[in-house]
Length: 304
Ligand code: A3P
Image (cartoon, rainbow, N blue to C red):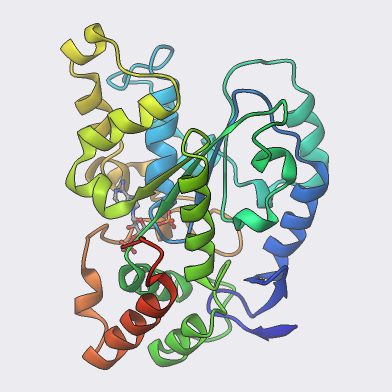
């Protein structure tokens, strides 16, 4: 089925979730061509949950020996996190050959918004030789919606702005990027409970509130814990500082040039605040979202 969309001109439903036409083509390509490797890391997020932030953190964490976070030539100072860690669904079929067949055995990091039920089986199947790790990130639903709404209206390809009311209607019906958002989140929540060594479930608010703890948790999960020597030299704080909203949003590379789908690089940095929904949603709008969240997550043990 085809429907109006929050971000693109229209969206399609595929395997129970809604996508822009470009993302849909990319997902089909990913299902067909992607071959994970033993030590790959796949970052999965709900769109507008802080993907770009966790991309930066993962990149800095995994490459900390080659690129110490205080290095004045650190790649994160000159390239956007999206350039350093590609979205699987934005790869072109021709790019899979070079990525999948490259002889380099170093840790590869990819990102995606694909729901767990539509990921290539080679990624999710714990018994397969790939055995790659999944890091999942989500965010408070109301903040997620507000971030998506502002982002949608920054799309240069949009014929006209979308109103808050229409965006909320579509979001609540599940018709948003990889929506229904609740189902995308729940899929990974269940997977993380069933297979905690395979899937790490993270929340935007937790990284904001306790960045050191969450960074160590992430490093531990990926089998790359910080050594005593690294702890003594404050590497954890250095990575957090390099990837902070303050640092990232001021970099020239993140403020110039374009991403894809008609978005500028700067569109990914708005204000990065927890609870910003209060400045945008009416009480009725907020309670409409809360009610759906309660219906969907009630009894699952998941709280955002
Ligand atoms: P807001 O619109 O609430 O400000 P994504 O990368 O998934 O598209 O998410 C974008 C959201 O993450 C935006 O939220 C953006 O401002 C926020 N963000 C970007 N970089 C961040 C950082 N370094 N720290 C915290 N939040 C960040």
